[in-house]
Length: 251
Image (tube, rainbow, N blue to C red; front, side, top):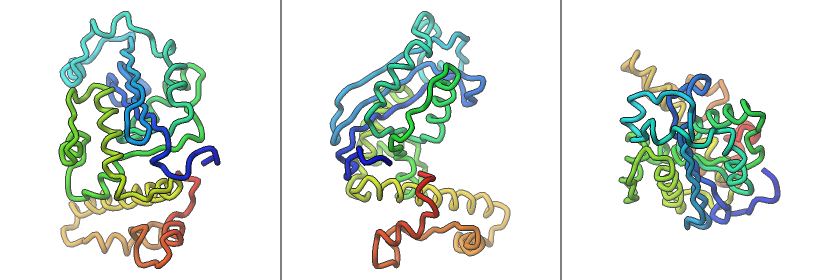
């Protein structure tokens, strides 16, 4: 993370984005809509929305999910035509997406296909990681979390609506997250691993009904994994955070 970013993440301009696509495989599927909502200190600053001609037929299930019809995208700009505008909207902003593990690789791949690069160095934030940590026993789809927090999600599965709701979810977690940007990113990395450990335990518990989450932690303790909370038994919070994260380069 460069020194140009503010110390407090609340002071970081955010570009929250969401994609609608023809499917899940970025090698064979295409983007049909991208929404970017720029926030600053909790307020919407600017909204970008592009319908994109995928140059292919839309699957019926995607039409049913998104209500984007073939006639809505036919004749719209191609991805290569609006990609520079996408990168311009990201410039100077922290980049946020709900389940960024899907949206970022998909968009990165499509940029690479036309000779462009994902913006390196921008802080990346995923509110899904925080939601999964705060509500580990509940389903955490965006609509469910938004409803839980009293956030309206009209027009779900349309890019701009989902992006705006994602930004509002992140700001709703503000008082439960470290205020410093660097610490937020470190905690995010730790909680992501913790969530993955819980998922691994759930999968394994289906095979062995007697296994507890503590058993999994004990088994994984020699593999560099930890489920210690960032502000656990360690008296110094910063020392606890850094000791639990093997390398900040993974952020």
